[in-house]
Amino acid sequence: MPTYISLGRWTPQGAHTMKESPARLEAAKKAFAADGVKMLHFFLTMGTHDMVIITEAPNDEVMAKAILSTIAKGGITTQTVRAFTEDEYKGLMKGLQL
Image (cartoon, rainbow, N blue to C red):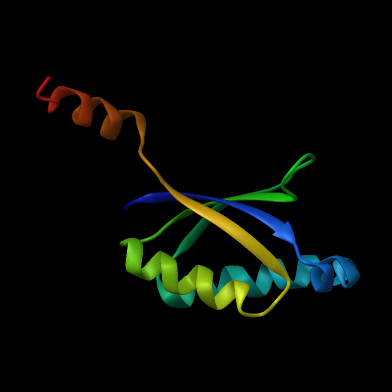
């Protein structure tokens, strides 16, 4: 399954209700699972982003729906990118026609 990396930031609303964040994370895991997305890792981070979330989803459309549903709740904003595993990367490099 494709892997995705999401960099998240709390919105002002999310920061104001930060103590509720662990419960929101558990709710997000369940909602993701119901949409076919598996949350592999969650990290609280310091710096320009407040969190990093690693997920797997069957395809980009399923991932987009899950992320859009999450950010619609107003607690976080995200930047999500498709991540290729080392094996996928090596396969892409072998197929290059340079």
